[in-house]
Length: 378
Image (cartoon, rainbow, N blue to C red):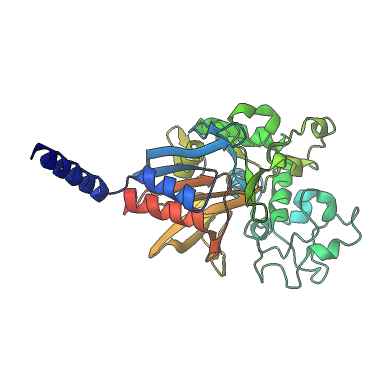
């Protein structure tokens, strides 16, 4: 009789454990396993406060190092918004306008040869409506300078500036160079001084100025080999190139278009500034009007309702319009999205996964955002 009671108790206990809902950590862990993915860093903001900050999986597979909340990631294209923010600060200072000719700002002719009378403005550059493309590469300004590239026409699409949209990394490496030319300060140092330091964020564009021990290794998934391969180029030292650095020309070395290294929590701190329309605890980085301008779509092509380095989408959480940006490079996928009306937001950074897409977004990013939204913001 006693044995039957014990067995019944164990059976009831097991049923109760099975019936328990999964915790958010368990849901995210299952997502890592089923995708599969190396590591995942997530942050949730509610009422402009960080309410959840978690890292799961690995920072480094070779050494079995766990990902931590202090880990730094090269976040790829979310970096563009830092470049745009810094330039818009100069617009507020009336040092430039968004309608200035990029040719004058960069110091050589930036003109679509098919439309020589149509100027390419800073506004068109920052909203990817410049008619430029990445077909000739974007890590060196020589590709777009007529003095160094006889085939510069290949850098342009066959529509006039302002009459079409194509996402283009070259736009933002040009933009970062313009920032450097205007300020006379090296790009990485200027972003640190004007954005990262005021917000108290650990990070930056210069690999050699950061603590390499904090870097989360990025991995690309090789389907044929069914394994993850470390992307060594993500955090490659630039010390030798910096010895011959030319201010206002060598700027793409830091990749204003995608080279920022930052933690998920640091990115959430920055996101809250944009969600609060330029305001942060210590003051303002942008005026409310300028912050709103960044978030106002200018390009309505497809899913990218792109403003000035921030876009709006309702494809991630059905029925909910979010503002932000994504990033993809070296195997990493990242996302920063917020709702300024609800004062909520989410950060998701994955340092390597078997990437599949749905409606233009990596499934691991979509699914992680869905989990976080349902658990904390719904």
